[in-house]
Image (cartoon, rainbow over all chains, first blue to last red; front, side):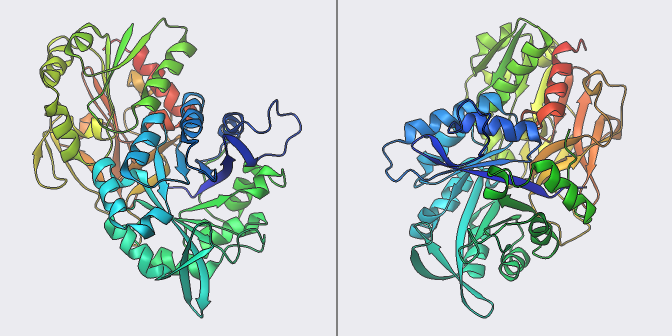
Length: 254
Length: 214
């Protein structure tokens, strides 16, 4: 049986992890490759790098990180942030990424998703959606890290992106992001029920039960979390143990 | 030992090549891994790895687009019997025929067809994406040494290889019914899942492949 996935996310800026594991025994706490190896050894099911470098002139650093990670870790790697054209996807895949995540550029030019999916296959195209509640049972798509409203309805947009060839939807609640109050379950459920492709729930994880809720109640196929793992609040093994105890199918660690 | 990872413009070859290098290193084998489409390199290779991502039709076209590539593969794998490992669409290409975006002839090295996943449970997501456990059908196959039913591997696909002869299926997974996970015949082996993304289990399969003397 297919297992729910736990995906730690590392924010990378100018080649350094800015929100990552806060372990004292790291040789270099800012090295994304070292952190990726820790998560690989810990049994994370996938890994995501989010490049939050403000300027686009430092992409070479990102490709180098992806290449070094791919040499060291034999697990699926998704890279997002700054993917603007088909060529960016190609470079990430060539460097060793398995999936490229497209956010703002998909809103600016929806055909990009179809073009990238046709060229490389849906399996490596993730569309990331940042959603904010705009009314009861309604969520608006935001871009530029949640700053720019688009007028798009999240459920409609997710459907459209899946139809265009997105192989997966990474769904972040901007209302919950950073609050540690749990996923927006209604949002997750609405999108998950609307699209045939897997949905990754993101934004708001503060406890292990939140992870369970994202899968069980939200209908997500995977849960993405950053701070609960990075700051050593919980380990991947603890997360898996809790999910297993709650009846969520997971892959045992080790 | 020299391993040719076939480059025909499909997907993430780096990961496959690095995983083969790692597996060889862990075995203490002196191995050269070359990402290549050069018929001369393929002719000299002791092992052939054919990765593949995306659509069957695209991969088939990519393979045919490289002059001399198919003939070199035919010679190395079929005529000379060099061990062959197909990954994902690289495994699907072993089939006689693929039904993704129309009907396309495969290499036809293992009889069967590639068809859309038929899921009894319509709420299941497509692609079949993530970690699923293997159900081993032929535990004595050398490439499965040390790999057991219940071990997890990473899948991402919407189509599956349905072999004409059930005996060609080495292992399957359960996703709304049985899904072919691994096929083999003579010197050919193929996985629907990605061994290069399947952590320790994947590296073990690749190591077994490198040690295999079919």
